[in-house]
Image 1: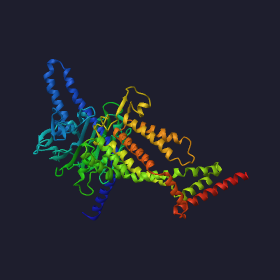
Image 2 (image 1 turned 90 degrees about the vertical axis):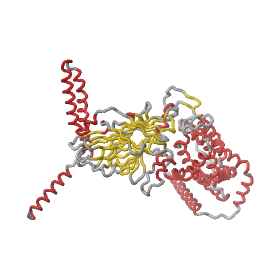
Image 3 (image 1 turned 90 degrees about the horizontal axis):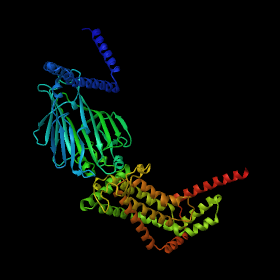
Image 4 (image 1 turned 30 degrees about the vertical axis):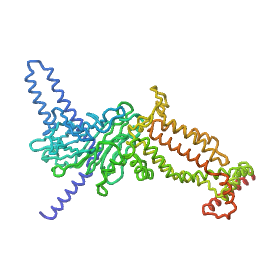
Length: 635
C-alpha cells in the first residue's frame, strides 16, 4: 500500500469522524428518542394485553384453537419486544424481607426494588408505624438497551429472589438466557440505617448493547406527612444533592422546581423534616435531572423524581456500588458515617440537618450542639434540657448583657442634661448643633451610645443559631413537657376547623400557648426596656408602638405554627433577660454612676481615631447645612 493510499484512508476516516461528531444527537434529542421508544414499547405491551380480551369474543367452539394461536402470538410478540427478557415479563409478585434492630425492609421481585421501609424506633404523630414508603409510593427503574436495540425497563420485569451467603443478604436475579443474568444484591448490616445495594452483570455481552457503559435510572417517591402541622413540616421537606467533590445543595422547597445538573453527584436525598431516603453512589450520578413537585392536599407532601445515569461494567468485573440510607436526620448519626472516611471522600450527610448557614452553622456545630448533646445524654426531660441550655447560653452572654445595660444606664442618668441641650437648641434648623452638643456631652462623660448596640450584635449569631437548631432537632420529636405533647410541633390550647381566609394560611387554625406566653413576656420586656433606654432625645413617631406591640404580634404570627420547643426557649430567654435587667437596676446605684460620669468630665480628653473621624464628619455635615441655608436665603 503506497503513501497516497494511506493518506487517503486517513482523510476518509477523519471526514467520517468529523461528520459523526457534528451530527451526534444532543442530550435533548436522546431523551426525546428514548421517550418515543418507551411510548412505542408501552403501545406494544398494551396490544399484548388486549389479546386475551379478543379471545373472549371468539365463539366457544373455536376457543381451543384461538387460545393456542393467541398464546403463540403473545410469545412471539413478547420475544420480539423483550428478546431474552421475554420470560421475565410474566410472573407473580413475591416479597422478601430484610430486618435488623432499626429497619424493616421489604423487597419486591417485580423490578427487584425496595418496596417498603419502616423505621422501628419511631411512630407518626398519631402513633402509627412510621413507614417511609409502601408499594407504588416509591419506584426505582433501570433502562436496559438490548443487543437488538430494544428498550427494557427493569420495573416491568420479574426477578428471582435468591438467598445470599449471608442471612442478611438478598439477591434479586434477572435471568437473561443461558448463564446470563443481572443481579441486584441487598445487604443490611446489624443495627444500621444503611442498606448496601450492588448491581452486577454476568454474561451480558451478547444480551445488552455492546456500547453499554452506563445504566439510565428513574427514581421517584411520594413523601408522606409524618408530623402534626402540614405547613411547618412542608417547609423542611426537600430534594437535596451533593456534588462529587463539592458542597450540598437543594432544590427550592416551595412550589415546583426542576433542575438539570451536569456535574457528577455523590448522593441524592429525598428529605422530610426528620427522616430521609438517600441514594448514594460510590462512582457518582451523571447527567442528572431533578424534579420536585409540591402537593397541596392529601397524605403526601411532595413528589420527587430523578433521572440520571450510573456507570456499569458490561463485562461484570466491576460492580456498580450503591447504598440506601433510610433513617432519621439526626446530626450525630449522619456525621458518624464520615468517621473513617478518607479526606475528600466524606459524605457530609449531616448537612441535611438545617443548622443555618456560615457563622450560624459554625456556632451550632461547635458551640451549641456539644452542650445540647451532653444535656440530652444525662437528662431525660427535654423541657429541662431546653431550660438548662438557655440558662447556660444566657450565663455565657451575661458580660455582654451587663455591658449593654450599663451603656443604657449611662444614657439614662445623663438624660436631664440632654433635655437641657434640647431646650437650648430647639427646632429642626438647629438639629446639627443639638447633635454636636449631645455627642460632646457623651464624650466628656465617657458614655458611648454605640457600646450598648455592639453587645447585642455579638449575641445575634448565637440567638439566630438557636432559632435554627430547635425546629431541626429530632431530639424534641414527640417529647412532652407540661401541656405540650410534642415539643417539635405546636401546642394548641384553642383550635377550630373552619377555614378563615388569610388567618388560616398564615396563622393557622389554632392558638399555641407557649407562643402566647412568649409574646406576653416580650411585650412586658419591650415596654420596660423602652423606659430604660429613654435618653431624652426625640424618637421617630410610632416607634414605641412598633417595638412594644407590633414586633411581638408579628412573632405570634410567625411562630404560632412552629415548634413549641422554640417558643418555650424564647419565653425562658426573655424571662431571664427581664430578671437580669431588674437585678441590674436593683444593684446598680445610678447616683454613684452619675457622680462617676461627672468626675470623668474633669479629666483631660483623649480623642480616639474614631472620635476624630466622627467630629470631622459632623463638621462637614454642618458646613453642607450652612451652605444650603445660605442658598435658601439668597433665593
